[in-house]
Length: 207
Image 1: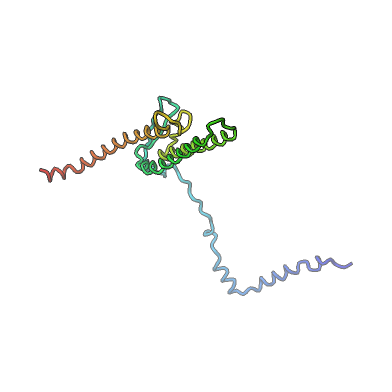
Image 2 (image 1 turned 135 degrees about the vertical axis):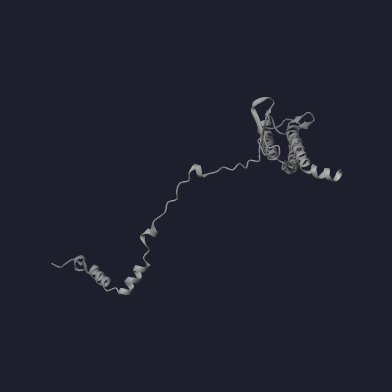
C-alpha cells in the first residue's frame, strides 16, 4: 500500500531547518547576540497616577456676570457681563440687521390684500413673519451675549409696536442702561486708581 504524500514528506523540512541552524557561522551568532535588546529595556513603564494633591488651581476668572430680575419675576433672571465693551461693536452690527428685518416686516404687512385674505396668503405671511421674529431674537442674544430675547420677552414678537417704538428697541434700551450704570461705576474706580498712582507726581510739579 502506497504511503500518503503527507507521510512521505513528514519531518523532512524540520530536519533540514535544524541542520541549517546548527551550521550558522559563529560570527553571525555573536552579531545577533550583541544586537539583542536587554529584557530590562523592553519593559513598559507605567505613568504614575496624578494625585489631587499634585494639582494646583489658578483662578483666572476675570468675567463676573451680574444677575438681574425681570419685572420682579424670580423665574426670569438675566445674567450679563456688564463690563463687556465689545457690546458696542456687536450692537452696531446687529442693529443694522434688525432695521433690515423691520423693513421686511413692513413689506409683508403692506403686501397683504385689503379685502378678504385667503388661507394660503395668511399661512405664507405667518411663516415669513415667524422666521423674521426668530432671526431678530438671535440678533438680540448676539448683542448681549445672553438669552435676552427669552428672558425679557413676555409674549408676542420682537417687532410688536409699543409706545411709538418696537419691542426689540425697548428691550435694547432697557438692558443697555444696565451696562451704562456698571461701566460708569467701573470707569470711576479706574479714574480713582489712576489718580492715586499719579497724585504724587502731579503734586510735585504743581507745588
